[in-house]
Length: 136
Image (tube, rainbow, N blue to C red; front, side, top):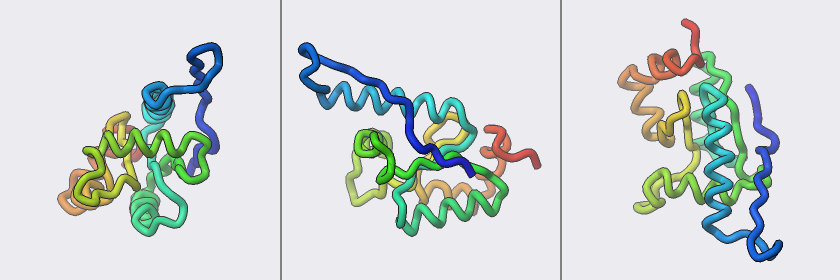
């Protein structure tokens, strides 16, 4: 298991060092996530202590996958990444969980419902193989 301790820092200043705008924070978060997911077969964004995140971790470990794990509550840019994941997951409406958020092969797979559905219908293992996360 690889845990991403700290993501690369992208500093953006406006008005001579006055701070970042929310749009720039979102862009920086997008760039960080993009670099991370393009460089790893499986990336899992979690919050420590989240039971559903634990379930997805255990499923992936049980299949023999060593995902890169980013715990948003322990990451310096976690709140910005969380906001980005809300947007990727459809805006967070209807009480949809944002974490766990799973990326496979550089693409957003989804949360626990999508991962479990793929596992049950037999499409998860082929996705993981295609991404290079499994060599079976």
